[in-house]
Image (cartoon, rainbow, N blue to C red):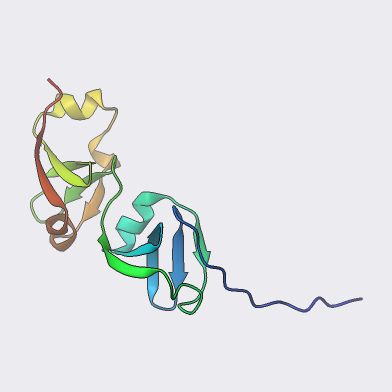
Length: 129
């Protein structure tokens, strides 16, 4: 039986994917990369992840931190407030009818820490009316 030699190849991850290097997980956007505020934020993006190395990604500059994906329903565990992520901002849900109209239920929310919630810019109140 022939054994195949495993080739160690670390790709440069293209835009729109997540690169996993020895320094963590990064969202790749063009020639920039953004570290995730937390694993919960990373999972909200539901994107393909590629294992690679810092060496392979050396030309992709670290440009900041990224939080939760637009469309994510988050609940700040410290205040119990529900927010919907819209245009990279957290919008407070003040009317349960809005939550229902959007097809969400409270249990769909991602529980987040105060630090994760505070990281997200405030977008005001969500008003569906």
